[in-house]
Image 1 (cartoon, rainbow, N blue to C red):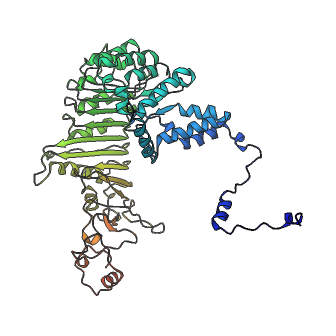
Image 2 (image 1 turned 180 degrees about the vertical axis):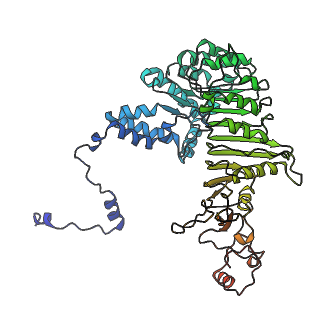
Image 3 (image 1 turned 90 degrees about the vertical axis):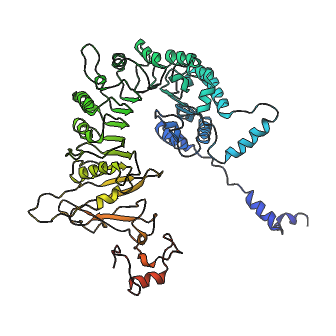
Length: 557
């Protein structure tokens, strides 16, 4: 009998929890076949690891605060470090990414920050509180100093503001073993000649010859002059704010930087047209890809046009940013656009105190401009007619004259500007008529007022060359249009969208978006407001004629 018990079927546990536990404890057999990951070459592994830690490919010359990425950078770095320790084959590729662009954040941008904060709080009860970014910088410093091969891989180092301000000595010890460093977040005292940053400056000048971006603020004139000794010959970007140097010295410094492509001037009262003029015996102002000018009162549009008369400068300049330069009013912008034949991006910000003169002004004309930031702000908002109105009317006239044929993106600080384009006067569609007025390219308009934080997007697709709306086979040409104040209560309030389509006569017409019919203003009761939609019965009654329409803007009747 005892022998036959071995052949009996085991009874299933009566307890349901035991059955569930047995099912949960079941594990699939581990894969014991050949390792398929060995077939992946280094290029494919690199692409995979780039997805694991996206910020490792951040090669921008922006500070830690301005070059944020989605997700938790600290967790991504941890996952990439685990990948480097998984297999010997993966170490070289993963470690190359891990130390290429190093980013130290103050907190975790995920739910783990609450857990770690509680742990740090418990540990700090018996002593000093631990600063996580400072500890991470110390760990990085120890790693690169112990392994110089890893230190040679570091090219970008981005730190929180408080860490780089309070850990200058640790930062100096770190950069002393990073010879290929191209960009690093530095404390503010480094840019204005503070004595507390002398050690960091000496280490950076002696050990890091490949720095690509540097800034000089008030007090950093001596540091700017030290470039004549041969430091940082690979500088690409130079920013100058409120520094006081001789224009001839500035030209000499720029003349020994062969890779310089972007210059930013801010608060330079001494800079004028002569800064850009050719002078015998002094190097010419270099040809730049990007030029930024902010609060340069003595500079004029004629001086920039003279600088652009040099073919090398004219052919190289792609981006020009002008902000609050009193010597370059709106009425002289056409001079700069006429001289900059290859300009692709123009950002112009100014404050208008008086309207434009009544004398005719040539339109803004450029066959290369693709993006335009045209932000005009009035100094006195209490006037009946804002001084900026004439500036935006001037822009509308330039657009309707087809003087900017390649413009695709437009940013304005007038929430009603997109509506001004839809109110273009109709033209006669006769066969013998001259070509229609108006721009012929699709245009994306971003507008907002002074009290608004986000840009309002409007995409406009004009009529074809004959003033017709075009074929309807691919769907009518429409755009998402949402003005700050909407198109009235019958359109559903501020959040409703409408579309802008050609009217067949060279102008534009606003019609409801697909699946969103406009509502009559008479059907909106005060208790419901603009955001509440009509019921099914109300819609049927409104469109079957049982209810009186009180809006002439209803295009569906």
